[in-house]
Amino acid sequence: MSLPALLDRLADIHNLDQAGALLNWDQRTYMPPRGSEPRAKQLATLAKLSHDLLVSQQTQDLLAAAEAAATHFPSGSKERAMLRVARRNMDKATKVPTALVVALTETASRAEDVWQQARADNNYPAFAPWLDKLLDLKRQYAAAVMPNVPIFDALLDDFEEGMTAAELNPLFDTLKAHGIPLVAAIQSRGKKISSDILTQHFDPAAQQAFCAFILKECGFPFDRGRLDTSVHPFCTNFSQNDVRITTRWEPNWLPGALFGCLHEMGHAFYELNIAPEYEATPLASGVSLGVHESQSRLWENLVGRSREFWIRYYTHLQKAFPSQLSAIPLDAFYESINRVAPSFIRVEADEVTYNLHIILRYEMEQALLNRQLSVTDAPAAWNEKLHKYLGITPPTDREGILQDVHWAFGGFGYFPTYSLGNVLAAQLFQSASHDLPTLRTDIQSGHFAGLLDWLRIHVHQHGKRYQPRALVLQATGKPLSTDAYLNYLTDKFGAIYRL
Ligand code: ZN
Image (tube, rainbow, N blue to C red; front, top):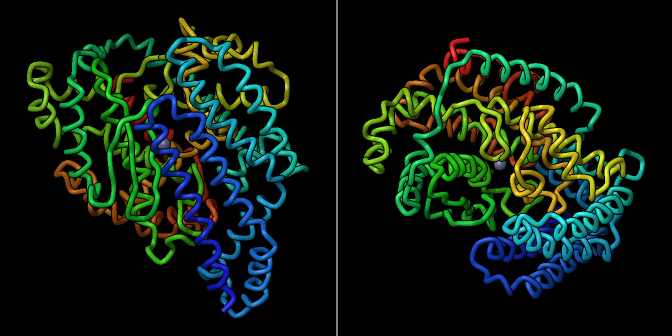
């Protein structure tokens, strides 16, 4: 009976964490601004309770007893996987002093509010001391949790188990070596694709109605999920039957909310389709952020920005926005949503330039954490790198270093998972296309059940049961590789720009 006793205890901890997630969702969606200080304390109290319960002698004894009694579970069983993940969580948590956990949670919560205001005011100096504090706390965290590896690798491991900068460097080198010349080839081709179609006025309420329609069409279950509004789009969940996504409605930029919703929907599908028996166990979430991001990218880009998708839905979009779109042919719309152009904002970047935004952040984070770059010099370094990779300089920090929420919540080591997601999305889509020969015509007919089921079977249902490497191998028959992704980019954008 020792495993059930352990799982009961871990479910209590899980429930405290989910309550914290709900407070965090509320903070980012509906909480009035002056609620932020007490909210930070509430979140810190929950984090402390959860942490104390996890590292308590009783939980450690329950885990040790369950491990000792686990020999009768076959290797590779779900029970063994639960114990493996529980041990990993326990080892990480016991190495971090409670005072540091509290400081990190409280600082991150306050810093996020400061960042929101600083971003609105284009006031980097207001945010800088908080960034400095978070970097310092994260250095302490890395030293506590994995003292013998580089700081960046210790932080990356929280998001992508087992991944290191040494492994990422060649992958990013390949993406850079492919991306920079592809952008150059597209620009020198001289084919002008305008984004004017997309910058007309699109009534936010009509956008919201259209996005809800698309989510339903794709199979998003509104009796198990919600769509709300926030400054920075995100997906969170409080149980397998309560998965929430948010987006921001920009009146003069149609793709922001539209593709933001498809992106977050991909994350939501993952959480919604984990095997019900894993609910509140250590296996009850996506295996890593990179694999999670592969799901959002797959729906946002490989489905949502495909010609097939818009063959099906463009007339619906035209009906939602007749004065803006009725005179615009499908081809012009398709090209405009796939326009390649160096730009300042990562979340609005096209598929070709996107990874260069990630590489910039990846390099800057390592320099900041290793003290090769100061917080004061960071905005200039940002601008210099963007110019080097994309040939443009942000007019203000709002379009530069202040644009992302990640550093404001201490999410260092997080950004590389976006590029891992891009690469894996293409590899999974290639495997799904192989198993589902009618996939493209299915998308064109608005039939997504086959694809969703393929993803559920090969990725979603497993939760954290397999480590990222094993899951990729099992789902696609090969290790993670940039091959499918680079072919996808070359084929798609070669056709659009007639390269
Ligand atoms: Zn995402």
